[in-house]
Every structure is written in C-alpha cells, then in structure tokens.
Image 1 (spheres, helix red, strand yellow):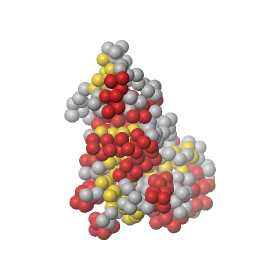
Image 2 (cartoon, rainbow, N blue to C red):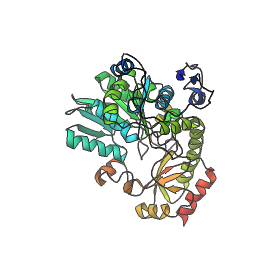
Image 3 (cartoon, rainbow, N blue to C red):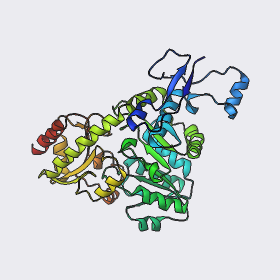
Image 4 (cartoon, rainbow, N blue to C red):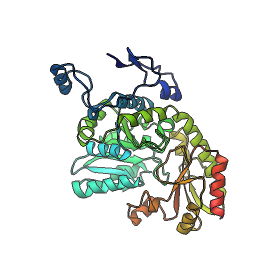
Amino acid sequence: MSKLLTKMMPKEWGFATQAIHGDGIKVEGGIGSLVPPIYQTSTFVFESVEQGANRFSGLEEGYVYTRLGNPTVQLLEQKIALLEGADSALAFGSGMAAISAVLMGIVRTGDHILCSRSLYGCTFGLLKLMEERYQVEVSLIEMTDEEEVRKAIRPNTTLIYLETPANPTMELIDLAMVSKVAKETGIYTAVDNTFLSPYLQRPIEYGCDIVIHSATKYIGGHGDVVAGVIAGSHDMMKQIQMTTQKDLGGILAPMDAFLLLRGLKTLALRMEQHNGSAQLVAEFLESHPFVSRVYYPGLPSFPQHELAKKQMKGFGGIIAFELTGGYEAAVHMLNRLNLCRLAVSLGDVDTLIQHPASMTHSIVPQEERWKMGISDGLVRLSVGIEEVEDIIEDLRQAMER
C-alpha cells in the first residue's frame, strides 16, 4: 500500500527552493507523480479494530478522519512551518477561523488581551464579541513605545496580539521589542503576518510565539481559495489542534490545501513583483497633487521607514492613501477605475482597491476607526503583478477625471 514519506531538506536552500521542494514528499510504491495527490476523503479505513483504537488513543500514528488530519493538508502545514521557521503549523478554513482558534485556544474568561491599535475589521469584531459575551478584557494601544507596552500589561494579560503592517494604515510594530517585553512577563505574542507573507517577514525570528496568515491572500495569491494558517512551537500547535481546531471544526479542505501548495511555489516570484511595483505606485501617488498622504513603508517619508528596513525583507504590496477631496473624491475615483478591481481582499495577482471605512472596517465604530487612523477618505490598494505602468495610468486617469 502506498504511503506518504518525507525527507529532510538541506538547510542551505533558499526560500524559493524551499517553497517548491520543501515538503520533500514522495509516494512509496506510487507512480512517480511530480505533484502530491489530493486526498479527497472524509474518513480513513482501519485494517483492524485494534488499529482504529490505537489511532484514537494516540498509541499509533495514522489518519482517522479529515477533521482530525489529512495528508494533503498536512503537506501544506509542513511547508508553512518550514517557510516561517516554526516547529509546526495548522491550517484552517479561513483567516478568521485561524484567528478565532488562536484567541479561543489561549484566552479564558477573565483574561486580558493587549492589541495593536489598528486591526482588521472582523478581528476587531471578534474581540468585541469575546469582551461582551465571555468577559475577556481587550485593550487597543499604539504599541510603538516600549514603556507604553509595559504600562498596558495587566496581571491578567495572557496574550499580545498585533498586526504589522497594520490593516489598512500600514503602521508598524517593533517585533523584537514586543516579544522581549512579552517574554519577560510570561505572555504569548501572536502576529498577523498576512500583509507580508513569510517571504518578506518572519516574526518567529524576532521571538514571537505564533504567526497567523489569512492564506487567502499572498499564500494562495490567485483569488480562488479561502483559508488560514498559523505556525509556532510543537506544544502550542498541539494545544490548539486538540482544542479549538478539533472541537470548533474550522478545518481546511484537501482541495483548498492543494491550491495553497500550488500558490506557495510561486510566492517568492510574486512577492518580488508585488513589492517592486508597489514602490513605484507609492512614489507616483506621493507626487500626485490630488493625493494628500500616502502610507507605504518603502517611502522615506513614512514615519517608520527605518523600522521597516530593519525587520522586513521588502515593503510589501499594500498601499493606503488619502485624496485631497476626502470621501467624495475617493468615491469618484474608485468608481472610475478600469484596470484596478473594486474588491475587498488583497494579495491577488490582480490589483484590488477598496474603501475601508465603508467596507472591510465598516463594523468598527467611527470613533474607533478614527483612533486607528482610518479616515472616511482613506483608500487601500493591493498592487497586483500587472505591468506597473498600466496600474499607474489607471490610477492617474481615475483621479484626473
């Protein structure tokens, strides 16, 4: 009977090579398939009652039921762990399923979560839900100053949760600083790394405990799958796997895992294109008279440009900007684009553009949005891999019309 085998990859291999070959998979007794098969099955057959009992009790390794583990999904998890420099990883049916599993797997009633000021709208909504229904305390702070982070920690703080770059303001947080404070006080750190992917930033290298991705974005990269992944230590991943992943059941389907494995093979190439084009688009926007402000870490004018150079390999493909005419100008511009697609999400090969205040962050009360730095005229742009001259021309004509 065929079975999956893995082999160790040379540590000196670069990121792009590991992203292609890093699963080290072959099929024993198989037919030499270059691409690992999709195990599109809900359950697995036991050879005996004793084998089934041993697998359920943990005395024997093996697959039982796809909610509890699937070979195709496991290949994805192994590769994510490799690329993030983590011991282990878990895959979920969406980015929010991944975030929910982390928060509910670590935090209990009466605990306190310290969060970065700017957060994705649905993450904010989940935190408010936990606050209202489960008596979990939540604080949102700027998190740019070490002393402010220390002051915000309470005796019941169990988790520091942050986004860097933040969605959508691109505000950065010093990962090494936050993880140092957290370790001194025995608190876990979880970082949403969606905006950069493991190609441009690896939070575990800076001492953070858990990395989270909406794999829908850059990891998938083609707008055809919804998924989430987390990575961290063996013990932490096992704890989350055996509680909130298993019992809440927000798992990833094998076919979706296959699509993500395919997306990972071109991640390095795509990120280089996203990164290079976004720099040119940001420079164009900053020079345009109709644009009042551009938020992009690659610009020397960006307040945290030096921090970006320190902890990021590149500046990413996401830009936020404000037009001089505010909300009305933003709406007119968005409605006149031809190439850029008016859609939420990000990280696709297509250039996507949206209005956070009325779309992704509409769940956040206006006062909270303003505190996050999200004005009613802010626009978020996810630069795709089209010819950058075409992206710039589309933005130019939409603004000048």
